Amino acid sequence: MSERLSSQHWNTDLSLLARKLNQQQDFLIIQDLDGVCMGLVRDPLNRDIDPGYVRAVRQLDGHFYVLTNGEHVGKRGVNPIVERAVGRDLAQHEGLYLPGLAGGGVQWQDRFGKVSHPGLQSQELAFLLQVPVKARYFLINLLGNPPYNLAKENIELLANSVVLDNRVSPTININLLSAVLGSVSAVNRLQADVQRFMHKLLAEAREQGMDDSFFVHYAPNLGRDSSTGIERIKPADTDSWGTTDFQFMVKGAVKEAGVMVLLNRYYFQQTGEYPLGEDFNARSAPADHQALLALAQQHFDPALMPSIIGVGDTITSHTIDLDGQPTTLRGGSDRGFLTLVQDLGQGFGSDNATVLVDSSAGEVIRPGVSSSLLTEQFDAAVAGLSDKDDPLKINFVIPAGYQQYLRFFIGMSR
Image (tube, rainbow, N blue to C red):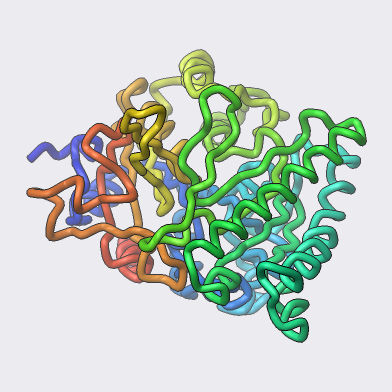
């Protein structure tokens, strides 16, 4: 078998990856958070993180960044979780916060917890502050009336739990509500209602002069509609609740752009200069995948391009009947950035690797990997995640979930 990381195909043996990373200095790990280094839970306030992992990240300073649609700050951010794990004083003194991009790419943090929001305007930040309040009011009214008719004494508590008051990515996370409602039909109805609410928010922003400031990110999703560019909701079914996170996000806050921002910072660490300019941010990056690749080819020195290891947990593949023809729709909040990592590796010859953590064992219902079927019944083994014609080629898969990834990560960093 080839020793190249990029030649692997859904390999469950991580020894090659660990050996390669221990042998080379020019590598960069770009990693999602929820479902990868923490278990997926219905209520984000219940998350915790392994102190050993936090310290391992510190050991990889300069070779590791997070890239998440969640956030660093706020009561539902990752920083409070880190502080509970290692202590706030220690985190601040030793620089144990997780460095990288949150909010899809518009919230930057260094390892000492210094946060900024490059590219955002004050009017946009002010509008985002109103979203959680409006979302709670919307849900309280919705759930107390037909067809939901939930007990009024529980509605306010539920609304406070599922509305995530993130600073730049306020979110309605319906995991808890899905469990309460129980049926697929009820969850599908709720998805449609929340989607309409999000579209109303977009209309309000446009009325206030912010025509191109925001978009709605659905996680998981079924990719983007080719005609509108809008993400497709993944409906609930018997195997998965489908789309559970409805995130009101800043236009340009997509993980693919975040990869370019992180590479720009990586090159600065190596050379003292920003190839894309010091002020380059996710909002100034091109939206098109090919344009991002072209930008990288034009500005990044191939001799300094690291081997990039992209780690995520959320990709989808779902075949539906579209105009009488079976059509495979592919999406997921990690698909875009993992695909860019893959294609950058091919363009620069940097032997990049894509890593998928199976997060199906958490509290959130989603498809998982049947590792015993990978070699003989591939499509069945990765049903709901990928397929044999998928242009995204996963190199390594971690079938035992985030606990297995933590063991690998902590062991590799020593």
